[in-house]
Image (cartoon, rainbow, N blue to C red; front, top):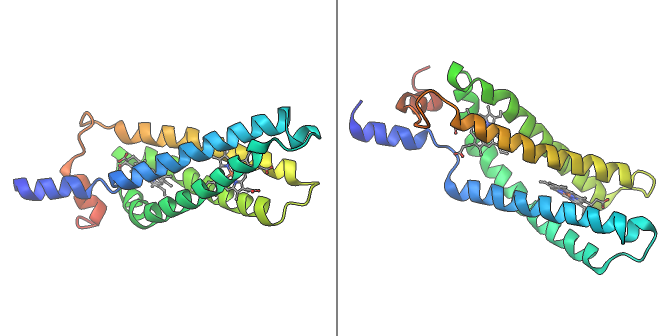
Length: 175
Ligand code: HEM
Ligand code: HEM
């Protein structure tokens, strides 16, 4: 293949732009950190113990909510660009292992958005703890799955170099 075509193909095969990845990891890390610290405070010295809410509880959730909006935006960009391309690539044997973890990631994201919404707008006191723990477990699962999915993206025969033919597959030109 011509050098320029190869160059373009190589970039076309990297559907997750650095700014999208940065936004995903930045918002994800903030969500995880604010969620875990909130859990620790709430259930040790805060409102979960029947005490006065710790002053940081409200601020942690404000931070959490802001990061959640960024995370949802970042997932929107990934839904538009990476999902269709990743889906096509995952029909190649070389990338087949990415399909299950990718689907689980998308599913966990939906669980997080739905339980997060319920926590904010509905959650009667009786179900709130269960909903909260389900939400947090989905968040932890998401972090682990993302690490796994990223490891999978690096594991391929060309020693970390994506083959130019991937781009052709990804754009559907070779189908
Ligand atoms: C149907 C669902 C999905 C499929 C089939 C899929 C497929 C793939 C494939 C084949 C790769 C390796 C090639 C490449 O880098 O493009 C990959 C990488 C990656 N995917 Fe997915 N994916 C899916 C969903 C997701 C979701 C929901 C996320 C984010 C939450 C995600 C995040 C990533 C990341 C961060 C990489 C590493 C790429 C990089 O760092 O440049 N994927 N995926
Ligand atoms: C895109 C991902 C996420 C979204 C959209 C989201 C959204 C939300 C929303 C809207 C709330 C309610 C805030 C309030 O009541 O003021 C919440 C609470 C919470 N989130 Fe998340 N969140 C996400 C990820 C995570 C992650 C990764 C964790 C990790 C531990 C987590 C842990 C928690 C906890 C512990 C609460 C408090 C639960 C309670 O009030 O009982 N969240 N989240």
